[in-house]
Length: 341
Image 1 (cartoon, helix red, strand yellow):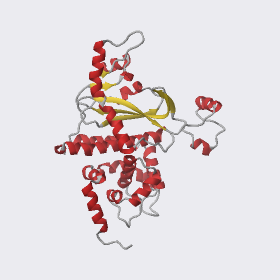
Image 2 (spheres, rainbow, N blue to C red):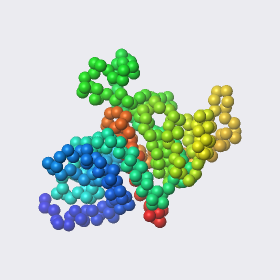
Image 3 (cartoon, rainbow, N blue to C red):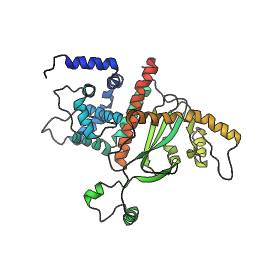
């Protein structure tokens, strides 16, 4: 089948009429702003000037964002870039241009992970948002979500040795690389989970993730409160569910000038009073907005599937997911408030 000269242009024109999200993303995000951070990856990856010229680092970063937006594996990402005109246009790739293969995508992300750049990229985009008038306002909402990974089959003796020594001597190198020894078990609502936790701080006004931390699933939500506090928010109010309630948290918030809007919790010897129940309902009307963030992440890309092993890689994948959410949310905010930019 012979294609006409304008077939691709016509197809993209029709796509624009239907609404191409990636085109909207490219139109509002300053991708070049990330280049100074991303250029550090090229210095590590490029050992000599021989061979094929490396792919542009900003384009590779866009690929990681597309991956996170659509929850794609490295192999599936390669296929989708080859297959989708919208992906190619977003990456400035013509039909005749070569597409980075799955190994190249994996290596780029691995170097960024090893250098700890994902958090830097996340913070850089937050500065972009602030510069365009999307500031943290009306208080902060704190919450956590469990991200599951494949459950590990480890014997009791191996588990004991792992806890005591940090590794199992009898494991071969290939087996050790397939065992996620950083993930942990936790229980929630009588159900057990194995994996990690995505702890986030979201500003009430814009529902933008301002801070995040990634831990194994066994870490209690309340232990991350101090690390998640957003000192740039125009309001000192901090909203959270009763899991974050403790004397230590209340004292710390008071000392740092924050106003606690953490839901109260009763106990066997001290049930909540009618006044405290009313207060919880009032706080929950605001606090519930943080659930919209996790809901939107799940609605747009489904449950996050961690195709990686270890806390560092999980932190990178979850961080990219949070960054991709913020970019998605930014497009929505511009549609709702076109005067922002």
